[in-house]
Image (cartoon, rainbow, N blue to C red; front, side):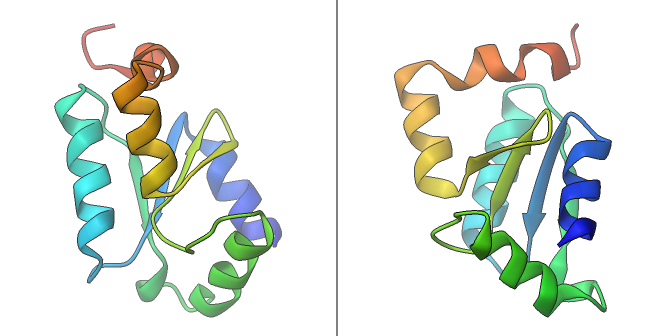
Length: 101
């Protein structure tokens, strides 16, 4: 869906989320702890939310939320983000978007 692609590429770090999703909260909190304030799109508050959820799944997300995009590129959901973080690969991706830069 063009809306997902457009929203994902408008900002450096974008998380598609649902307001009731605890994993979305955890990923958002992690990014904030790393000094990044991602743009959050709560798809359950968007009139096109169902279509956006389908689009996220078609991009290859194993779960529709959280769906994390960095520089317009799909990074993945919770598992992929946490794997990158634990391996030390997430911080370099986020460095241009950290508040102290």
